[in-house]
Image (cartoon, rainbow, N blue to C red; front, side, top):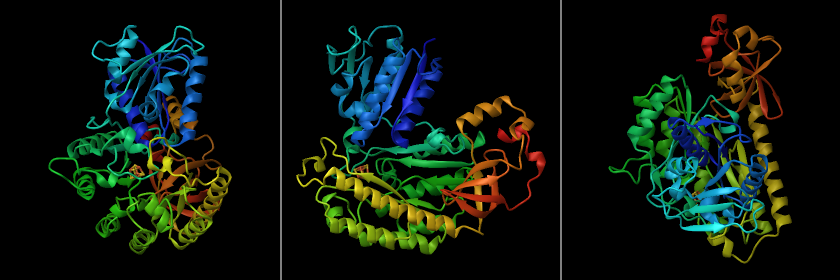
Length: 483
Ligand code: SF4
């Protein structure tokens, strides 16, 4: 049976697509292999910034140089947005847009028997005159992204972590933020039916999972396309009532979907991780309006303060864009001051990147690249200051944490005995994550996927240093604890 490798890029939604494809290929008997040796290499791309496109191009060139015999299939958001551009890259056999991702297993099957699928009529077929592989040709398969089924499988390897899977429950977006290419490449909002979400969460719980992260492109719109229509908060209630999941985290939610009801629901249920990630993008109302964001700074502030009032220790994160066209020094200063006034605990800063086909790409008043860079630097410094203050507030407090493991640790633990895993328990550290999204280094070696109450003793860089606040029975430190 042919072997495959999937090179993943992009956000959790794209990674969930890749995970779904992996499951489909494994079910059909394909075997995973290293990218240097695999018969089929799928590059699952992102296109949210020009840098993401460039990373994907570099990866494709590298794969083609390292593995001459691989059939390279490029899919994902970049493949959907600019298929002809992608098809020019060396070694690419197929470019399959998000519109045709569900057909990828069939395409791969057909590639494996060295013939193009009969069912598909490529939109375009290019002969690559400039390719270093003279015989190379790329088939392009893209089309309308609307009304395509939502692909989803739990992602276990986001951020190198194998403990807390991410489950994509929603895809696409009905909004049209001026800078954003996502609606073009992912189509309208679509939701995974309630029952499927519950079934997947129950299966994950059966396999020992204790925390799940729900993700989507615009998760607050979950269920508006379903019939009967349901709300996101109804789904959250059903998850808590109908599954034994111990901790549920929501990855990112638009500020206007963070209602008083939702905040009160989080505050009343300790199985909900006290963590809100609300994209802000700018603190200047003129820029928010130009971005076609549907809230103003005062609306955002009201929600952030309400979260802090109900959940004094919650993590509150925001995304901000530096250098949107027309952003003046005054707008930037307003954003800095606004961020300072908010109870944020971390900030993700993005430099504005012109995306073809978006409204912002046509705006004339661009901010020079050097200015964008220096504004992004200032914003990051402001964010780091707020994160550091939040971490320092934790010293002396007790936190509930979940111990983590990476893919590497997984492989090692499968082979080892408990003694081999914990050779020097006292001097080593274990990685963990607090409910309020703080990275913790815990003194001693502890099994992964365990809840511990820990006392924070210090801060080192971006990590809290902690000790267990409760004694743990040594009998837990057996290999069975990893199951
Ligand atoms: S809400 Fe705006 S930024 Fe988010 S995916 Fe939709 S269009 Fe893009």
